[in-house]
Image (cartoon, rainbow over all chains, first blue to last red; front, side):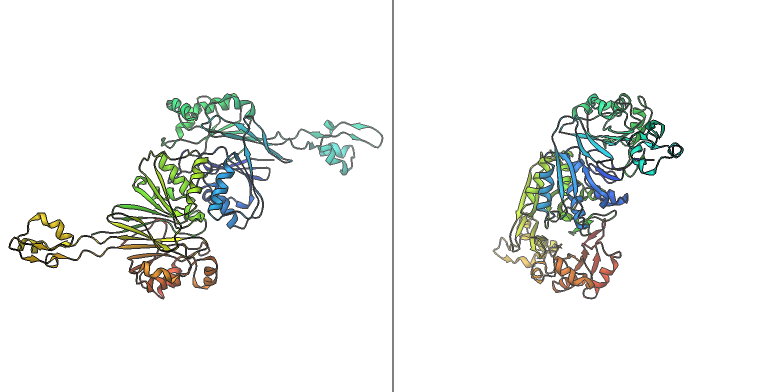
Amino acid sequence: MSELKLHILGCYSATPRAFTNPTAQVLEIKGHLFLIDCGEGTQVQLRKQKIKFSRIKHIFISHLHGDHFFGLPGLLSTFRLLGRDAPMHVYGPKGIKEAVVTMLRVGHAWTNYPLIFHELTAMESEIIFEDEKVEVHTIPLTHRVYTNGFLFKEKEGDRKLDINAVLNYNIDKCYYQNIKKGKDVVLENGEIIPNNLLTNDPLPPKSYAFCSDTSYNETIIPIIENANALYHESTFLEPHEKLAKQTGHSTALQAASIASKAKVKNLILGHYSTRYNNIQVFKEEAEQLFKHVELAEDGKAFTF
Amino acid sequence: MSELKLHILGCYSATPRAFTNPTAQVLEIKGHLFLIDCGEGTQVQLRKQKIKFSRIKHIFISHLHGDHFFGLPGLLSTFRLLGRDAPMHVYGPKGIKEAVVTMLRVGHAWTNYPLIFHELTAMESEIIFEDEKVEVHTIPLTHRVYTNGFLFKEKEGDRKLDINAVLNYNIDKCYYQNIKKGKDVVLENGEIIPNNLLTNDPLPPKSYAFCSDTSYNETIIPIIENANALYHESTFLEPHEKLAKQTGHSTALQAASIASKAKVKNLILGHYSTRYNNIQVFKEEAEQLFKHVELAEDGKAFTF
């Protein structure tokens, strides 16, 4: 059965500190390792989590605040030092190419592998990556600067072959591929066996929505609806709701409200302001509105 | 008595790893806290060593390789988030301003404190900072790119008043300041008391030479001569002497040879290649030529 695995490399806001890291995550989905955001120190966190650098081929950057992308020049140089030759795709707001390329050029660290930037400017959700198994959609967020969250979505898989049924009808193996794609079978005697007698529904495709940083914004609900997991920032708690609004952030309760309205299966909180000593309180606040709340923590992994 | 204190924040070459950091040091000298090089993660190391961010007013960058300056944009943004308003001076090779300013601009992190770049291009040693107590000289190094080491040097202090002598001659206190500056005293009867009867030599001024990265280069010897401590890179050991030369680096033995010829008091080794598991071997190799060898280690401090 297909599983999504999310590695939290860093989930605190503003600045790296002695024992907390700015935003970065790795999502394992259908054989891909997608790096999401890349605050300073992300490469160290990748090493600590023993994530193989060479398996990362796509990096998604939500917005151009330092705590979400200042780790990029260092990581891209390290790829070069490790002898990478596979292409690397970087998706992020317009400007990311100029910043990263300038650092690499001035730092004599221009890559010897193809480094391809996909600069984002759209204000509506769009598909920015797609292959036969996965789609990545942007989730336009409301922050102080142009920001996108990302929806990572498995595609509908093949139908499941009902092996007893196909053996019963004595159907040749060479038809199996077509049956899985939903086709009916015509037997030699001309009889048509409808596909629904030969197959079962595939597993429902899974999805993961990453939303950091954003103020409370209900327009994202239709995009993230029914996601298996939603990472929604909760920089603040309710007593700082006004500050959240001013700075383009959310409270834990607001994150829970979005999770509830979007009927997601799990809510993962993160991007905590470093003003709070105890993150447990974020969970308690969110649980007032939504049942399945998890706390992101640096080094933690979630499977769903 | 005046002491120099050197905090090693990172002393490994190439890339940050799970438990080692790229080059960064803080030198305490005559009330200054000078930050020397700033690899990725330096701000985290500063926090771990409990070094007060606000006391840093001058940053010296040896060269524009990522492991020596990729921590700069993050550190400078953090200064801003901490509400800094004191000016910050950054000394480093031409190009550093473009790279850092581009990252800060694209990252919406332009500073609200004065950020002053002093871009270096000279091929000869020059004084790049000076006040009444300290001078900083560049040490032109030989690396793959334009690189300077830095010599941090106390200025000659005032002469020490011989309090018994001045009391003996019944000299008024108002002359003390001039006597400390080396002036003779004319008594009321016209008699001249030469300064050397009233004072003793001041403590010899101390100095610290930072030399990373460089291949073996004897032209630096006159600049660093007699330094109290020399940090000299030893990326490699003698079996890799050829590789050292090719990559613009030194071996531990070569570092010891420079230390010995420059008659410095202490040699501190660092910038170890991450290919070696045991840094003790660097000390053993260097001790073949020089007695006072210390190993830099992340988090270690030296007083001299």
